[in-house]
Amino acid sequence: MKILKKILFIGLIFFGVSVLFILWANFKIDSESEDYVTSEFSKLPNEKTGLLLGTSKTLSNGSPNAYFFNRIEAAAELYKSGKVQNIIVSGDNSKKDYNEPEEMKNELIKAGVPAEKIFEDFAGFRTLDSVVRAKEIFGQKSYIIISQRFHNERAVYLARKNGIEAYGFNAADVNKYAGIKTNAREKLARAKVFWDFIFGIEPRYGGEKILIP
Image (cartoon, rainbow, N blue to C red; front, side, top):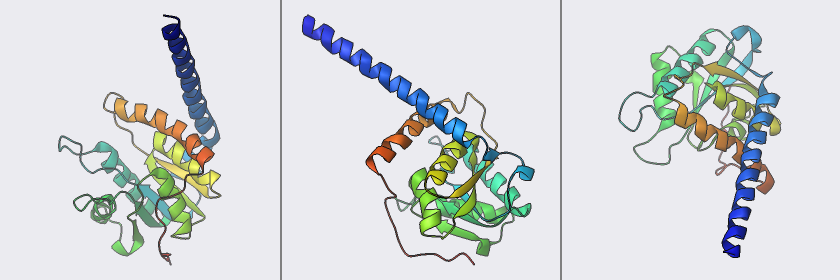
């Protein structure tokens, strides 16, 4: 019985520390990114490039993913406003029948962005990969990230910690009930940011440099 109590006590301590760490990580990212993310064009600098972060075009039930299409709309608006001249579409292409960058490019073209202004990053498996590869592979030391606010805050924080002058343009969010699972996952992802810092995690793949004229 004493052993069980001791195990329970240690488990409760571990749980409490974990919760505090998650809360701290979220506060840290919120506070350090708030001045760099916005939904207003007037608060953004003019940049050579925008970085559109990937997600699936459809949900598991086959219906359209509002996160995806809201990001496409925001990226097209950003380009048409003249705030960016080019767009890097960065996402997952780890399976033959799954290609986030290609789907984003096709939708951007439909939305009026010229194909020659869109550059595909097929190794954007994580947000960390996307923001660092935009610098290391595509040579962009400053850019505007396009995603929903909750995602932009983490992406901008990561980019700036990697020596990139990054800003975030917020796409429209989905309603709070539809996004419960995504927002819960984001809380944990923010804690993992600092776990990755501790262990020096870097992007999974490098590759040849890609010139953006």
